[in-house]
Length: 302
Image (cartoon, rainbow, N blue to C red; front, side, top):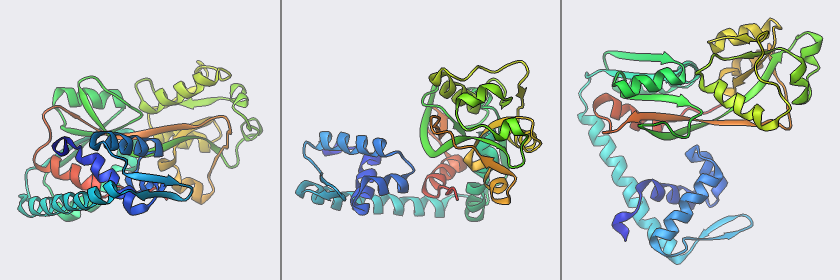
């Protein structure tokens, strides 16, 4: 039975045991609480024993849980040792080629690359940037071995591994014209211009899906702007040309400087996940090293 244990679930179990609560573990792992709970339940089913008892302030290990935690800690230490040894033996060259959808390329990957390059200094380095559909095509064609994309739960012929949580929010200029400044509810969006990403964009897919579920917001109109770049959308929003939907990762600077304002819309929550995507067969060389580094050193949204 033990030989069939999933190391990822074992690591989730270790982090939950260390945190003493599912919510704290979820934050550490950059996963949702339901995802963490599901992994623990699957692990309990695999070992045939309850691993935690639940109470109001968190969770407590059972006898079986305490026994398994010792092994989980050993596995964790062994994997850390293996990573250190592989990193020490990794040749400085070999090159690194990555793909990324536009939001991930602009606001997430640079943070990961900064620390990775300081440790590994791969040469040469190439980052291919496109919308989500384009990046998935590059992966299937073998143009890049690894890519960071947003908003997907599955992609035909590719493997997806969730990485970071994100939220898309409606934004306007702080000094927006009166119709835009008056938006208070989802229904108000029907009366103002919206600024959309281009077809094929993961951001657009997620926003359209969320708005369709509410049934009170109209689809994109011919009079709406369609802009194929996040920075360009921000420029249009700052000029008062409409309301845009942008990742919280992409607007930190403008919100802090007082240029953009997030519009609180109680009925609208647009959550998504940034995921690593790769073709079958696994990773090797610098791509494998980068993947390990990225998962161990995720950036934090301030």
